[in-house]
Length: 309
Ligand code: NAP
Image 1 (cartoon, rainbow, N blue to C red):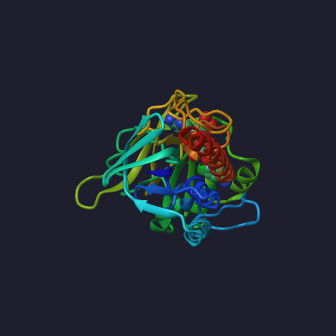
Image 2 (image 1 turned 45 degrees about the horizontal axis):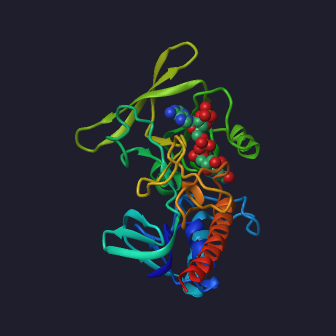
Image 3 (image 1 turned 120 degrees about the vertical axis):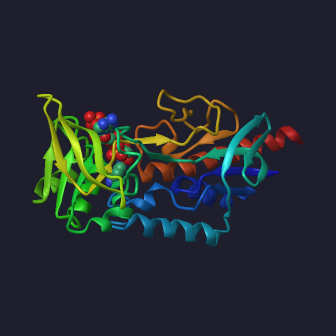
């Protein structure tokens, strides 16, 4: 039986793994596809102390090699469910069951969908949730970015360096993004803001080569509809937590509720990073969560040992 199973290998999970090795806990990280996390999709990280500007991918590579060097055990396998049997946690995966004394959930979150006609049909054919992944396909083209948060503005800026024209569509007249990003976006000459507006439909060619051609935009003040020609639609309207595998207390949006030591409503099961109900979804917060939860796990396991001897 492992002391600790960490589900998810993003920054929060890897930090938990690094701390676990240092505590001498017998630990494994189970990750669905590749040790990485959402941060690997960030073009540039500029708010992580010690690194004034570093690409998300490069930072993730540094986490990975740190974890490897220190000897964190990882396995690529999809976790299907987690069963709490008191002092024993059973983690079912597509390659069998794993047992541990404690579990840290670090499953992160995925981009939310707009759920408008055409979105699903044109995913990877013009509809994208990641400018760093798909931006280069839109060199000198026209793209639309949806949303007013940090992700939308950061990626609109990235796209403004690749595409000829970027339309930023946001449902209110105020952006949510931090001021430094807003200022840069307002200065970019090829970003045009369409505020108080939403997308009703994404339309494109469905015969032969499938690709986006235009969108239908609704002015939320006047109710007027207009068609806007575009080659791509990048959607950033928030994130949805990957928490279906575990039955613990969650908030209305599905983010896992924890106490101040990051323990969930079930003893010995902790949650860290973007899947957790937290006011700050940031890299520094994820890293802090990983460290704190593992420290709490170490105390939990010490207590566990005393009780079983
Ligand atoms: P976010 O901050 O939650 O922003 C989502 C945006 O989408 C909001 O402007 C929201 O509008 C809009 N929206 C939500 N639902 C919508 C809908 N159905 N239709 C149209 N618009 C909709 O999400 P995010 O930008 O993805 O960021 C997620 C987290 O990561 C945030 O905490 C963010 O700070 C963090 N992040 C940080 C950085 C950084 O620090 N460099 C970079 C990227 C992301 P309203 O404003 O009207 O609600």
